[in-house]
Image (cartoon, rainbow, N blue to C red; front, side, top):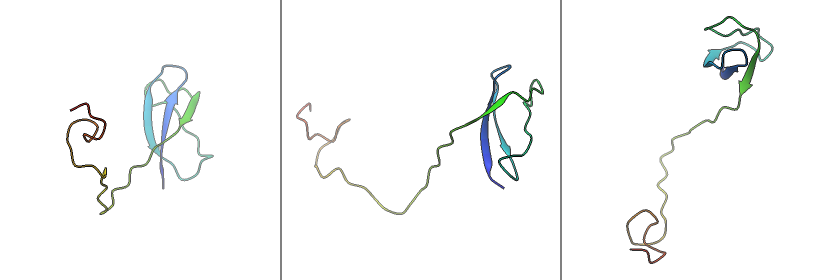
Length: 68
């Protein structure tokens, strides 16, 4: 079952919930309102790949802009 993120339109509470289907009934855990909206969920995936900036430098920008 996927986890969906929701925001309650009645009280503003944000929460996550496991649901079997998108059409499943969901209510706010704080105020029990059914006036909820599903929020966009961003998924982070960790891989074994290492990314390089291509420049040998440091600081906030990698040193390629000359600010260091």
